[in-house]
Length: 449
Image 1: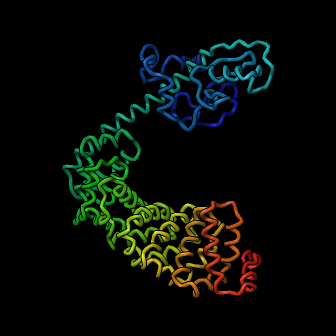
Image 2: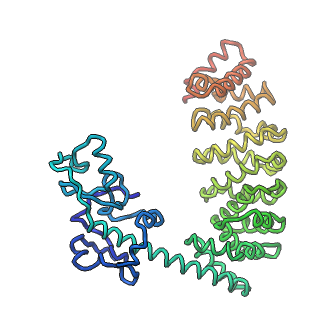
């Protein structure tokens, strides 16, 4: 909710919701009759009493509310405003709680109260109710219009072809993106099945991209997900992912993620060379970092399936991820390390990590640099590589400053399992050195540099 700022002379911005920036004060609002109803809204009298102020506030969830309606204590809109003897107004329940804690001062001014009487501020309550009523009516009208428009566009979509179909899909995408009621209408009226039917081997990019941008915003049931998991439809989604803008690519990624999270999901759906290659294009696109997180998140979900890991390794994912790590934010680094750790379980993954010259320096650098979880993944990968070729890899790791980093992990506040793993790796690395030489390798100076 908005932060409280003391109003200027009880000023209220844009009471009539026209966005014209007019500032009205409470007295003028009463004098001009603005409390009596909303122009064109049918409120005022009996109709207004049917609306619950609490419900309107919750459903509207407005990011900006006139500060005069905000309780200085809770920073929430007031539903039952009361005024103290100091002239300051608060939500009744909040000021009574303040009193119950033994405070007999005005929370805003900190003046001692010479009278603990609280007076209902009926004018402000009426004004608050009117303002929220107007916003609520406008919202409901927009929702009803959106529902009708969505239904109309669905009917049209079933009849048109060619450029008219594309234009109808574009309009439906806008309505669905902006109105939850429109999304529900599309689902209730069988729109998901029709949109899915438009995806197939002969789907053009223009139609496919619009369909996917709509589907990704809809609630898909199990039957809808099963339908979309057909090979021809998945192939169509991959084709769109390869050709589309970054926004379209992200929509494709989100739609595939929704299918993976379905209970009827089968790993063979994503065990596709073309899908994984298209996904890696999204992940490694340095010009459009907005695709990094959704792309890595989907790759993480896919890498959870053992039968797909070898295929991920074969498309060259490991060196690509290692190259990308230095430019990723912490959340994306954690996802990338999770994926690399998952791939290190399969023999091809272990070998690919060992063969990549940047594996050890990158993992050593990440120790104690991002999060404890990242340190855990990095240690796991280093352990895997060093075990595969103890003599060769341990020498490279120690030269990269691993020994000193491991001592930092052991002496840190990390969990016991992490410290144990660091100790075991430190012991493995020490086998190739005399005690004197290894102790010199453990000095922090070189690592810090």
